[in-house]
Image 1 (cartoon, one colour):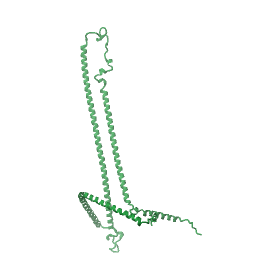
Image 2 (image 1 turned 90 degrees about the horizontal axis):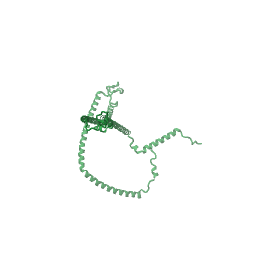
Image 3 (image 1 turned 180 degrees about the horizontal axis):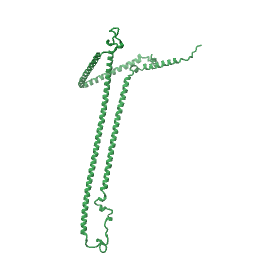
Image 4 (image 1 turned 120 degrees about the vertical axis):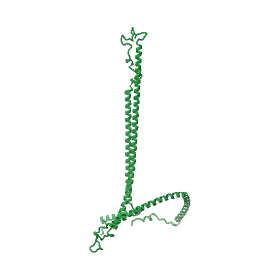
Length: 379
């Protein structure tokens, strides 16, 4: 007779589901004591995120600066190494050229003894039939007297003198060339030292410039932070002053009868024609604000003087406190010992009381089912 299997309406079902989800969300908020009592400070969280982003950006800039410095140092080291290799290569090349030009084997003093073509260059024992060195029997002139000994001796002395002169000249040229090579080497070494000093000086100047730029950057960040704080302070003061001015010049508090005179009488004004306060009133307010600013500056200076005075007093009190510190430590030690003894006594009494309550008073302990009946709904 009755239709008991009628399906629920979709709207009713959705409403029931919505109320169920709302009840679950409400239970989550109500049973969460931390969220219910403290809440969430979104402004503080946003400020922390902004500070963290600023610190990360600062760290990234610092890392980039150090990376650029490392790259520049690597380039300077490569240039120095390349220059040193070029200088060594030029010195070795000039030394080999000097040896190839001025230190030939034929210029040695004992070359006539060590010449492999000595026999080819020497005059043979017999040149012709009328060679005066040969004897009548073609046995190279066996005679008891050398007819050409005097001329030969003279020629040999002249040849020895010529050889001696040539050797002296060769030695002088060798000494001069060696001195020139030494001067060239010393000049090149001095040039290398000067270049190294200039590069070291440039590196020091660059390092000082980097340090100065880092200090300037830190100072700029400090000034920016101070300016931002000052700007926030000025904005707050400006907002406070604006709020005060709005409260003073609002339509409900001050109405200018000269600018909004009603036709129904001088004692009535038209609200939509009112233009605000007069210049005298504004000037008075600005003067009052200037006086307040000066008064605030004076109070700040007095506060700074009081702080300085308190700092001096704290230093004096700290010096005086160091004298009685040991006495206080001794008294604290005695007090801690007394407290420890009292705690031991109270703990013993508490254990005795707990044992008495557990054995005599609290005999009927609640079960888990008793606690499960609480906090089942948020209502």
